[in-house]
Image (cartoon, rainbow, N blue to C red; front, side):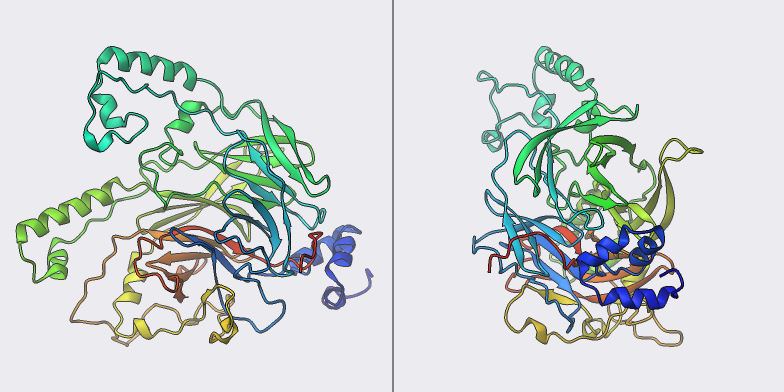
Length: 513
C-alpha cells in the first residue's frame, strides 16, 4: 500500500463501507492521515439543526442535495411525541429530548435508541460523546450542577410590590431595599459558600454508555491547578439564575476534537475531558472586558424611520431607551471547532471576535488562546439590506422540516470553496442602493449558528436571514432565510440553539423501523 499514490489509495477507500474504513484508520499513521484529511469516514457539512422558542420541533437549515442519504430533517423516525428539541450533536449522532425522555438518533440512517431515566441532581445539560474513529459506541454525560447561590427567605413582615409577589425569591432590586442586618447575614453566607473551588478536584457525573446500556456514576479527576470559585460561576451574566439571562443566552455547548471532549461551562472556563482516562483539565476562556464598543444610534435616522411620528418627544424618549438597551447588552460566547481545532467566539452587537486554542505542550505548559479574527460586520449587513434587490437575492439554503416535497427546494449550488457566489458586497461601479431610504435597523442581535467543520466559515443569522462569513477574506455571503413556516411573530420564534450537522453512516443504534 505504501507504493500507491495517496489519491489512488483514497479513491479505493471511498468504495469501502464506513466500518472497514474505521478499521483501516487504525493500521498506520499514513492511513490515519489520509482518511481524516479527506473526510472518508465522517461526511462533510450537511446543514444546521435549529431549535426555536415556541416551536415544538427543531428545523433543519441546509442546502438541498440530491445525493443519498436523505437527512431525516423532521426526525420522523422517532415516536410521535408531540414536542422535542435537539440537545446536542456529535459526529453524526443527535441527542433529542422530549418532555421527560432522551433519545439518541442518527438522522442519516434513521436508527435511534431510547435512553433509560437518569438520576436527578446532575444538572439539566446532557452532552453526547461519539467518536467513530475510536469506537462506534457512544456515551451521554451529565455533570453535577454547581450549587446555587444562597437565597434570602421571604420575610412575611416585609410587604412586596404586587408585581413581585409571584416571584419565589427576592429580586436584586428588592434585596437592595431590605434591612441592612438581613442583607449582611445573606452576604456573609454567600461569601463563605462562594469561596469554594469549582469545579471540584473530583467531579462526579452520570454517564450512560451504549456498551453497558445503563447510567453509572463516574468521577473525573482534575489534572491542573487553575482555580475558579462558585462566586465566579454566580457572577457570570449567563448563569442559570442571572436576571440578565434570556433565550438568546449561549448554551453550554461541547465538542469532540482529537480524542478529547471540551465542555463550555458557565463561569468563564472550559473543561477538557479525557474520556478514556477519566481525567479533566480547566481552561480559562478569553477575557472580554473592554473589547467591544456599543454602537451609537443615529437620532435623525431613528426619527425618519418613525415618521410621521405623533409625538417627537415620545419618539426621542424611545430612542434613548433603545440606546440604553444597546449599552447594557451582554456579549454572547460560543465554543466550536473548525479547520484549526477549538474555536472560541464572542459576539457583541455586530462585532465578532474569534480565538483559536493552542494546546499545552512541553514548551508551553499552559493552554493559550490566540486572537485569530476581529471585525465589525455591520457594514457588510448594511450593504446587503440597503440594496434595492436584496429581497430577490438567490437563496442557496432553505428551511426543511422533513415534510413531503421538501426535496423540491431550488438548489443554487452553494459552494463553500467559492467565496464569491452570491456575495453581498457591492460590485465596483454598480449603484444598487436604495437612495430613498438609507436607514437599516441594526439594533437586533446576531445569531451564531456554528462553524463549518473543516473550513474557516462562520454561519451567522440576522433577523432569520442566514449568512456564511469567511474568516480568511472577511466576506459575507447570503444563504437564505430560516424563519419557521407558519409563525407570524419573530419574538415567538426566536432562535434558541443550533447544531452543525455532519452525517455519519455507521452506528450501533437499533433499527426501529
